[in-house]
Image (cartoon, rainbow, N blue to C red; front, side, top):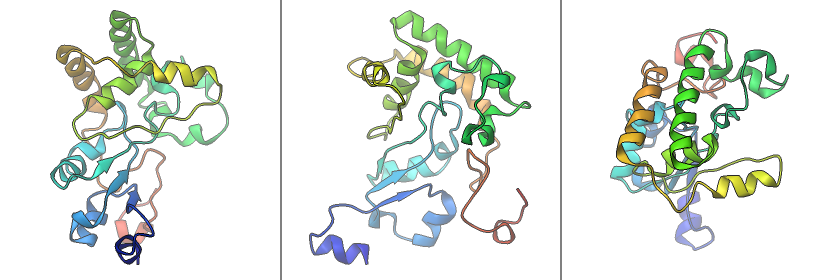
Length: 198
């Protein structure tokens, strides 16, 4: 139906959200899709294994959401006690077993940001924008000042050595993620189909 609407000129593009390997396999021909909206940031990099290379190969626009991992990469949380009692409580990077490792990544991010005279948030966004195949990022904000801060991610680039440093320090957090893993621990497929219990 979406392809028919696109052919008739009623829509310009077909986009999907949160598709990982299984969904692309079900579709068959990736060129039928124009854009993907995945969760992607320094702390959650599961798309890099297969999905991002597929999107590059088929020229599918990748527009990540949660590029700051719900404020973690902005340096907003110094401890788990400071996390509001909202959806962030289910964020898998805000759990006691992984938070110390996340904090290490954020500290390196702060060091790199200082080198450029930027904030950690601007630097985390820049790291994504400097990644081949990323078309844009979806950035949320709760205050008008954050609009200006987010714009500070534009019109500059990380040196290759700094981009690589951030990639290497954050990589271990995502190495064991599977195609059904999500940042908030849910997936639209039911548990029987994916073979495990949340």
